[in-house]
Image 1: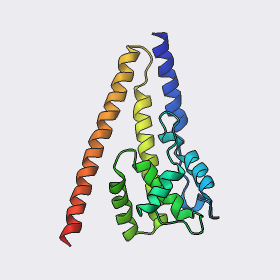
Image 2: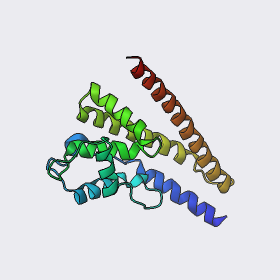
Image 3: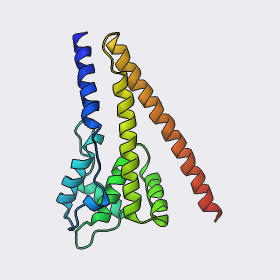
Amino acid sequence: MKDIKEINKRLCKWCEDNMAIRLPRWEELPELELYMDQVIAFTEKHLQFFSEDGTKVITPSIINNYVKLGIIPPPVRKRYSRTHLAYLIMVCTLKQIMPIPTVQILISRKVQRFSVDSVYNDFCDAQESAFKKSLGEASARFIDGGDYAFILEDISLSMAVAANAEKAVAAKIILEMKGIDSEK
């Protein structure tokens, strides 16, 4: 039981520590163009929250594949701009819950209507808001007393179920949007 209590404390602290998670806004992305290793270091630093077990969220081969598939624009003289970084942060975040072609559709549709910097900054705002909501809900349920194992199981299950439901709704909306595109 002591181990479960300790896990509860660590998770509560983790939620508190991560309430301040913040993705860099467009204006905070490097103005200078970066080489591949610099892009990897920059994006890994800002996306480590998505690595459950410390595995890389992005690698050179992933970036090369995204360029080949047209998900991100090709680099200019092997250098990557703010636009590349913005796309990579959005794609690497969203790929956690939906297929890459779907992510590509979402981002490209938004960029057709709005500037990349606006789409990216709105994305950052929405992602941070979702983080804070989930972390707040979880930390509110970490309580002293009671059956800690049950509390942890209950929190993780309800969070997974909510994520699954939101993913299903997003997938249905995207499917309907594809239908609109095919009618044109």
